[in-house]
Image (cartoon, rainbow over all chains, first blue to last red; front, side, top):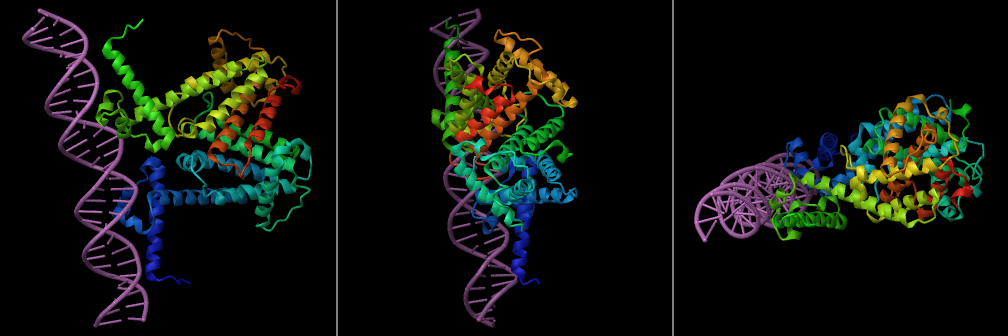
Length: 239
Length: 239
DNA sequence: GAACTCTTGTAAACACCGTTCGCTGAAACC
DNA sequence: GGTTTCAGCGAACGGTGTTTACAAGAGTTC
């Protein structure tokens, strides 16, 4: 089983400790505290030693982003699996609630991953859970309330591309869906749902609501209701 | 007119240059480049001299946030004033478009002001334009399509507080509105609109849409249409 | 005008940061 | 056993925020 040599095992272990230390610093004291020297101090080594594992401070931060995405995806998948209702509406609710809870519990991580003017983030890991769920949602929602006519002509090209991304994401998990249930109208509403979900969570995490919301959870629930209704679910299906 | 002494004028001038240099550094090279020494270098002075004007690097960044908010508010007001249609729907569109354009043109400023896990930001300046416009929108939208029953009971307390904030914001500009046209249902939809507006703009600025959107503007326009419809406007009124 | 205070700048220093370089010592390999 | 590989070290460079002591000018008071 352990084909790795002793050296390789030690290296992997150190690398793991580096990531763990970096993560702890981010959580405890924010992005600016994730310092090569601070990480090294936690491991009992010196800063230059870290260059045996990462090319630069920036590369280490990038790795940290990937780890965060992976962890969040795992948390979302866990919450998805914990829902045994079998109803897609409940699954969507479970994942959206999990996303909000995760963001509120990990504001520094959320800010780093979702609100940094960075190039291309390692969002592949986190995106897959959203994509898979969105695909399932659409696939099992047979009520075709949204015709393609509803979406502006200019958006068709982009939405078709997203349609392909969705189909691929779902098929990776063994589910195949036809083009008829995955029309552009529904895809458009999925994107709009992502806008609202992200908007609410980011506003709440960053405290940028136009007034002090003492208990934002009911507002979130209310928004979810509206989202599910807009996307084609009837109230009776989601309760 | 110039009651300020010569010393006070010089100090104000230096302070202005400091803000200007800090802003330029932020725009050109990002948050991490806004350094006391870099600012001092631009002014031809030394870093410790800046402590005669600001208590710390953090205080200077806070001032920078306020400046950004003020500038953005000015830009939004300018775009609001440029709309001579007299129709609130057009005014809302003008301001929302201006907000998106400003955010896309100033990503670093947007990230600093709208997406930093900071305490209480100096959002008063920027918020007023939104609040005023939201108040006007509601005041002139006489179709009471949203009853208070639509919003969850738990939200009433917070929405009532926001209602008061709106009334105050509008009355500061000389307009008074009755409680009847500013019911909780409408206020709720205003908050939801802010969620969607912020969500779209932040996703676009940070590049976090689930797929590459080649031309996001039509999607933004489409969302605005939906927002205005949701909030109670008829299509005929907004064209 | 001289003496005094207040203000604004400086230079030096401290601790910290990312990064590079040459070196060591031990593990791995042949 | 000899050689290679490699993780870690220490020193160093230039950068950072911040504090301190000090100088020089402006403004004020007598």
